[in-house]
Image (cartoon, rainbow, N blue to C red; front, top):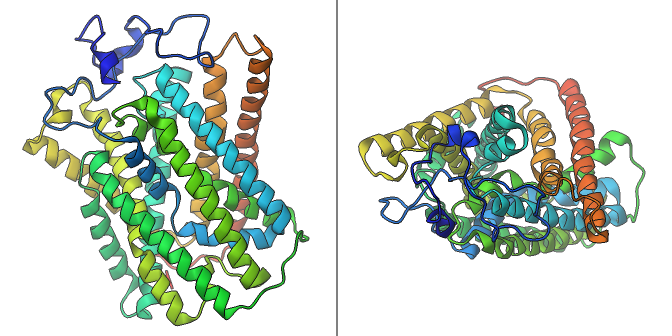
Length: 463
């Protein structure tokens, strides 16, 4: 990406707030046959600019480091909820959904990469929204991404609290554990570059992989086999909720633009995407089938509840790094989204002075406190998180990528048989996003309505 920046005709055009009015020449080498449009698109600067002499350089990620970050953000303790989702649908339809949506998620991830290549200045969903819908789209997707990221941060604080309660048999108030989770998450969020976060992502993956192996072995020993059903009777709410849990286990696309933006070579993004999808599809498939086979229809969500108390404590302990670090990555991206918005077009982005570092720390403290308050103060937080996931992840991972492709290829949807097939595929992706959002909001809203409210800021709230 930085090699294209050296070709800019006017080096003074770096203000992203006025970039819609700047008319620069389009680089014809950026787009491939699937990305070509009838009219040319002006080339625009990204928020990181030319980093040749910068103190802090952001565009330093290798593709495998980007892949590890994507794996850590995607695969967390939620993987142990997949066996319960399989039990709610039956083995056959669950496997079809798991495999098919894995390939759909792979394709929509690739489309996000295409969109980034076509519009190199895009470094976030907000930038992509501006390309699609102008200022309104920028503000809409910025707000949606920030709200979703903060709720994900809150969910990891809450999960940390639950894990500590399980491991210590409620040795202290849940509020104390929540504050501990807040402080640890804040500290790990302080690095300003994705490259420095990539090593944390490796620890996160090792942690969740080890916890999953422990869970499979323990459940395999304790349960010689459960009642396996190829299909099962269900209703709309139960069936769709189970399907949604499987589909949304792939939904981490909201952060893809942010990660691609810090790659040394954005064209290597497909390698990182392949690493992510080969790991998560394989791990979801093996974990879901093995645990469902041994635990049967009565498997809990997460599956750690189907193990003995001692082994469950051990598994929670092993999973602690991923519980913390997966949330940290979302927190880092949330901080970066605000930081780049505030300092875009200035040299403050690349400084290590008091103003730059103090601003970053201040933003991180504010966001993590907000996340802690949300996790602690909302009695129906789990149901509300499901609502936020259905509302935003469905669009970020499926609906919007379909719209991106249709926008990039406007005027050429039926230009060739291949284009016709791809047009149908991307319209289908858009429809998947609409259906997931609509039915997901309905199911989550009903769950919130039926949930007897608990107490806010309670020691027993997360028991």
